[in-house]
Length: 592
Image 1 (cartoon, rainbow, N blue to C red):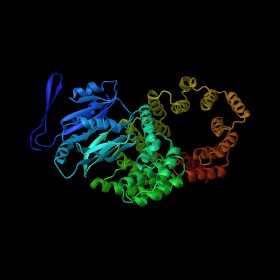
Image 2: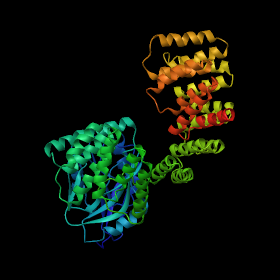
Image 3: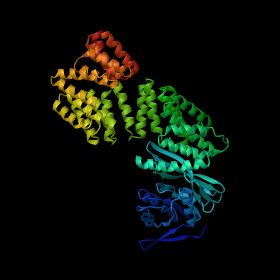
Image 4: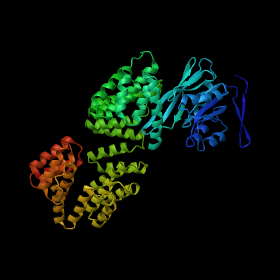
């Protein structure tokens, strides 16, 4: 098209003129309902890219229509009839330009790609253009391709939900970027979204039980709802559907099913079956970023560190190839930006293999790629603790807090490190900072009270205990702390009576023996402490800290050989247990 096209609309009594400058013209088509949160951002992103904005409103009660009109959009009203395709097709019917750009209110067009968009619609050899859609997720950002630009009159939508564009002729794969924000909402908003989507997908599946596209989308919806039993049930069914080996779309849906099924199996502790599923998927697509990553996670959970390491490295190799030359994929690639997570997991693998220097390098790389993720700082700081590099550990945790990663675990970790460095007042200050942000955190309260007791700040400890006691009157740990304070004040009789009263009820939960055993250590009743802590070990045989406490009791009783055996057992379970390492060093000084 060479004739300049003029389109006039009204805004506040003034004319808005859109000029196509010789290129084919472009209509933006949207359907909306109560989208005032995202709509301004969306319309701002497309206003300089299109020649008209057509919006079908399906029943908004907020400021959606007012916002749309402020951008010069033509708004039409159609009642919602439980079909996204019907509503979208209405919007197409109102469009008047040569090409259509279909966008959702919770999306935005990359401004730098507008010139590319205008260039691609001048080509006559195709009728549709795939764009790359990047979706913000709670755990990162995914990527997939979808036909969002197409020639008017050559395409329509089918399917009541997760609708598909059916178009005539060929399509062109582009890297025009759309950003999608609708999957990173509040928990309640997402629950409503999944419920609505799930109901429509179940309706579609009832009408067409072997539709692999519907099955894959419903499986993902169940996964998002944490309904892993349904994911497994429908996933196994979906993989048994006979599909053409040359059908690219069906193969892509099959890969989606493999992934979601593997995650469901992983989350229900069916680890071996999850591994089998991933290895079947890799045979069909050796470079699947998602499958490579989840298989690494599965092997990491099995503590097969060397094998897990290889898959995380394969993921990084495949991602590097993807960065250099993007691979067209109809599936949503969840792990598209998981390089930082891969490096963090590589650090865990190296640490599990005893390769401490390599683990440190990997954790630092994860932080370099994403310096806002508390887990990476926590893992590196914990690594330093295991190596008795307490100053480095404190610096790392402090750096995380200075950068704004105000994660509760970072505060607790920093407080524990400061306590280990014999800096009780700094540790108390750190935990108080956490409680200012989360006043109901009982673990932080317990830690703070114990710090105050150790610093002999008994009045402060009692005051802190009062604050939390009223909301947890039956918490055994708090009751034990109260007795600890009494003991510090010289009332041992109360503590002994308290322990005997609890034990007279023959408690069944092992945590009771854990708490009472630690209280016996405080009161120097070491034989009783050993008896109680060993009862706890029957249900938690790999608790290195408890084994260390038992060994310490033997040492206090003068049974140094038993203490040595206990500490060595604790370090066999957890070679990085700093508590056991420190006690072992102290014991050897007396033992040899």
